[in-house]
Image (cartoon, rainbow over all chains, first blue to last red; front, side, top):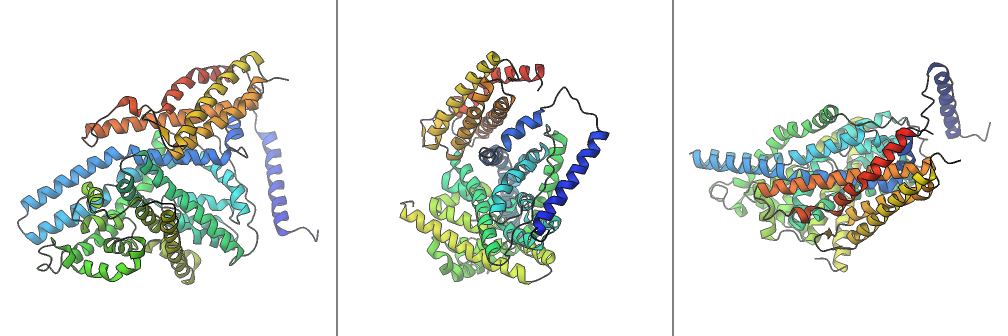
Length: 436
Length: 139
């Protein structure tokens, strides 16, 4: 008994528990003996396959993002047209120049440039709800556990990580189900690297700018999600080998039967997860937009009512921090967008909407015409937004869940450093390979 | 012992092999930059098609021998075929909507008709045959 480790004992307990359950089921449940190999068995034979399982998972995830990016495009255009029309209406009918500027530039351009991303966010949540309700997501966790265990992550970490695609806050809270403290802390620390829905508007905007409306833009967005997963796994490995030495606890997971997802349930899940975006747009983002509009339109006389943005307070702030981002090929606007994006990542897009003085319908065109981003610098910017400090609310969640200020501060520090390193590598390697 | 008639398995196996080859060829062309407007270059899209091909190939030998595990791969391949066929059909609808909204200069149904859609329709007889077999035979 002495050479039996605690991990072996845990596995033994789990096996015995399942054996007991099987015995009870044998006496209590009557099975249809004519059908032994079910549809679920057939699909599991393929989807849990040692070699095919992960490529199939990646393919289905890519399909979900392609659906998100391309199918939502016409609905985004409809919202753009609506806000463009409202902005024009405000400018034409409001006599007070301060109020007209606030409504047309602040509300319609700033808030409108964020709300236009409601379709891709809801479409992404619909795709994830379909994957989850069909029973596939549990298989994905099972398939990924093989890699994750080897890399020092607990298989159960995968579920909070998948939740992170929606929002990192509930994902961090979902780690409460993990009993092992080290496993839990690693999962919390790497969770901000999983790309949440708030970052999607930034990817959609920038990938549209650098790749246009093509399948490549969808692929660029998907590559950000892959980069996030890869970095999360890499950092988990680093943490496991340095801060939290030891082996992850074994993972036992009940696989549900495959089902055809019901439209009502999938739509309800989509709404439950997506409504936070609308709430944030009406609260945090609204407040930040007002602050940015004020800073970009004042001093009122010097900016001629927000027309000459180079004379504004925000341009002063942008030029002060510009040297930090200059080596990456980003201008002062990108620096300002990154700074305000710390409050909520969607604000990056709203900031561009306000600074360029256009609604979302023209932010992309304005960025293209100004030549702010090349494919390389744009891709590096997307990576930076993915990695750098998570939003304030996520840091608050890390503080609450770890009961220590040390971990949110550590998360901020390591993610900022990682963002600079990865973006620098993208620029450096890309330049060496001859990309502009 | 075979789980189902091997003659029936041979038909399904040959059909799955043909579909697998088609997916592999088109997937590789997409991965390596595409060929004109009919097969556009698409790294991840091409990768997904190669994965579907591999799923079909994995099942061919088993299904020819009348093994239900081989048939599972054909069912898995058909499932992926349906997912990607339906995905590209939806993308075609989205492109049509963009044209109607005046955001696209032209809408060419032919250019938007990606090979995955064609393969989806080509796989329908196989899906029917597999469905009929799985309803008739149990193992």
